[in-house]
Structures are given as C-alpha cells and as structure tokens.
Image 1 (cartoon, rainbow, N blue to C red):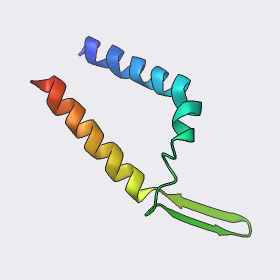
Image 2: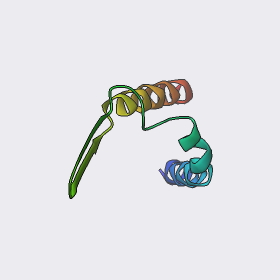
Image 3: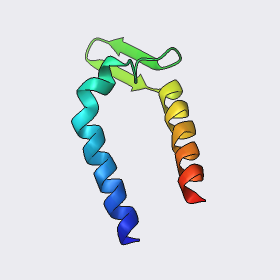
Image 4: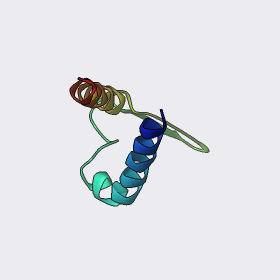
Length: 66
C-alpha cells in the first residue's frame, strides 16, 4: 500500500511539472467537451477528455497489474 501511495504521489508531481507541455497537446479541449459561457457563469464538463483518461488509466493498470 505504501508503494502504491508513493507511486501515485510521484505521478501527480510529474503531471504537475509537465502540465504546461500537456496543455499544448490540447488535452481538455477535445471535441465533445461541453463548455457553456454566460455572463457571470461558466460551465466546463470534459466528457471526451474523461473517457480518454479513463481508457488510458485502465490500460496502464492492466499492463502493470500483471
């Protein structure tokens, strides 16, 4: 359990450091992501991004889980 928590923490740090690079790839602004902007209100619901992140995370966990 300790190794898992340390690994997750390191992954979060790595994503935080690489975030400027990742934002240039267009992650979070994919077709299918819902963005509603009104005066004094903004709603962002990244459906497509969540699906892609879920698929990638599933593949990584299955690959390293065996």
